Image (cartoon, rainbow, N blue to C red):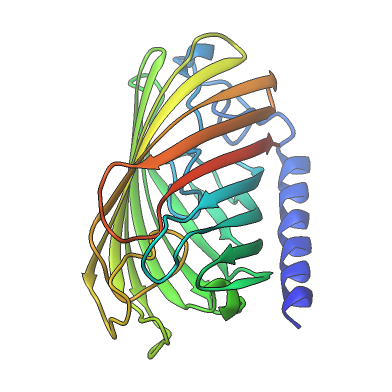
Length: 297
């Protein structure tokens, strides 16, 4: 039933994206508004790069219609409960502009191949979706802000550290300075799954983004991601689940990523980033490579 549910969800979301693309065929990523007209103050170098790392949690302030395919290769540090190993994640996100300020965000799904000390298995991830409201769009000042809410449905496989329900609230702001673009996102998560074998916490995350528009087809990026548990319910393991899973507690984790986006066309972007921890501690972070493809409609 889980593969069927995932397949049906993907088909429905892809259909919505296709319909939105047909209705708004003139929409170009960050270059035009919802109705297809270019904002008078917009310049090509004002194009922001979408968040590249921590894709389940890092959300910008723009309302777009796009599909983002992700591949993550995650290395676990040796020692502790995990005791080394790797995880490979294959996922896709769908975003649909419902109006010029409201967006449907299907931000979590996919399949995980886990080869680590805690588990050597593969399975489906939880599914999460929500709505984002872009309440501030100032193209002249390159200033945008949004808030959103979502829910993660516990339909994934426990063998790959999924099957955790949680409510998510977030806010984001993006500010451009001609070719330089900054972004900041904050999330708060509340676990809803009750007693879990490895714990189930309430936690915060924050995500900072910098990109620089070098030319029409290239932008380098730097991102920081931080995770903090503020209510370690049923703490069983003494480390953070970061964006991999919801665990019982652990120290704060901060990571840094360096990467770049290449744009072969106006509607397509290929990105990759290398991410590593800035904090010490017994957590799930060794290093991570994130690659993604963005297709806008």
